[in-house]
Amino acid sequence: MSPADQQDSPTKRSRDRSQRTARVKPEAIPASPESAEIADLDLSEIPEVIELDTPRDGVPLVINTAEGLSRAAKALAAGTGPAGVDAERASGFRYGQRAFLVQIRREGAGTWLIDPEPFEDLKIIDEALRGVEWILHAASQDLPCLYDLGMWPDSLFDTELAARIAGLPKVGLAAVVEQLLGFGLAKEHSAADWSTRPLPEPWLRYAALDVEVLAELREELVELLTADGKLEWVNEEFHAILQVGPPAPRVDPWRRTSGVHQLRDRRQLAAVRQLWQERDALAQNRDVAPGRLLPDSAIVVAAKAMPNTIPQLLAVPGFNGRAVHREAPRWMRAINEAKALKELPPLHLPSNAPPPPRAWTDKDPAAAARLATARPRLAALAKDLKLPVENLLTPDFLRRLCWRPPELFELESIAAALADLGARGWQIKLTAPLLVEAFNHPDPLPNKDATAEGSASN
Image (tube, rainbow, N blue to C red; front, side, top):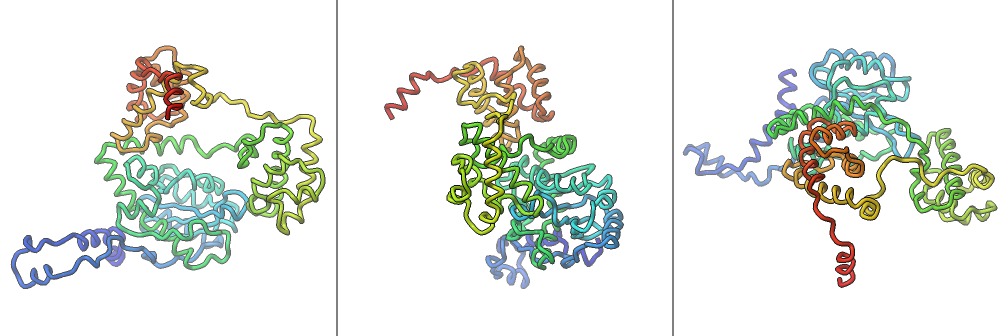
């Protein structure tokens, strides 16, 4: 970093803020004319949070040419230290979850804003960052769209996950930056339509600021985690994220239609599937978010009603507006296809997941007792460790282990079962002894009759 950069770097500004906001005690200042002036200063007007509204190097130009992309790759490869990485999508506006802007900042290279749309992929950027640690906030949100562009880190630091395990009360980027660095980050453009071209200058400023202080934030989190003995925990988490890779495509994604759980008829379920698939194909063709063509609620209501004519269909709540009316024959055709199907989808996909815990007492009281005992003990341990209980042990892992435990409730077998489920080493070390005790000596379940009587009396 050049001396000029150093004079106005976020780290320097953070130190300045700490010095300026400290309350000066007059009695602690040696007597001198200067100290009298200092004692008279009104420090109450100094802001607790310094708003970051302009990137330190100005707002970068958007890279959208092959020449510019090559220049960005060379600069990033020549930089030093980790790279702050972020991506902006157009969720709710465009089809899918692809990135419409990729932001990267690295020491010695500056900040680069890249428009991925003109390029087949960004493998040249991925190659430039080979062997470099990437700093992302909530990596699980951005890694899939970066993967689609041919980008995947060799090493990762997720500031959101690190903040969770560090025990910070709020883990959004703006909140963590404010808590640890004392800077304010605006978030008013986070839900914008990033497919807009050209991107407005205020949006570009926002995008550049999102990676402006990631390196400094990483340093603060590492210091915090090291002091609490948690640094190795987050390193295991980051390694696991990279090992698992991007999520696999969902089986029967139409089953995630909001409200589909209300349906108990397979023919109606078939109507949801046909409408969802028709909508998805049209949305992909038009590159528009499916919900903008037809809301989920309308699909479910139409599947319940199973109309026979287009006028009946257009009377269904949600089938209003010029665009929906224009495509009415398409939606009616999908419903008619569902009516004609001979093979209907099952109400539920096969699953090896345990039943809902509310049913355990009747189905397997011993499993219910194990879960009822382990849950509060894990919660107490998580509180002592100052981290969310779901980060201490994934709730699904706990349910599966309680429902189908190993034959022997011993440390080795419980630890092996947790490892098979995907728990990390640090989680196993902390939770396995607790689970062994809970499984061997579960608390008695409350008497159902007594519980019912108590509820009735209340």
